[in-house]
Length: 155
Image (cartoon, rainbow, N blue to C red; front, side):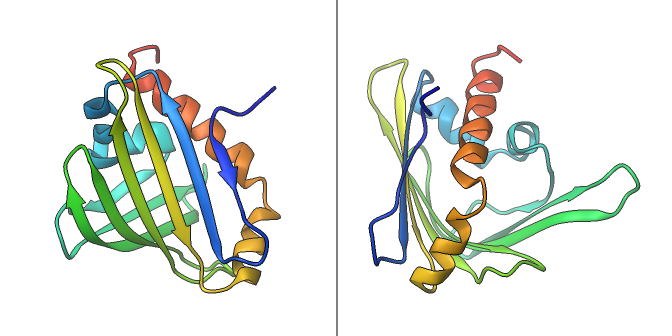
């Protein structure tokens, strides 16, 4: 089955380019990234902090059934333009990956469709390649499918 979310990694570069067209108005797509309740639902995580403003910060956490933290990520929001753009850092705690810089751009295609483009810059080509060794493309596709279902009211 072909993934709707496309992940492109150019040889020898420390970047990832991710694109996805959604059957959602751009305002709903943006809300999925900007409102804590929606982020928590489609990502399946707890939003500890989400300050959507320039120089704001964010932090997410996921615990297992016994209450042990299995995932924690955080970052700083550098630019926040509603329905258009979020520029932020992304850092997973206790992971072998260093902080990444993410440029998320939201584009209206029609009144009922939109596109998300994510340009992620890693510290090195090796860090980018290490991320790609994980089931990254599969995971982001699953997450984006869930996002679309939740925001469209199908879940």
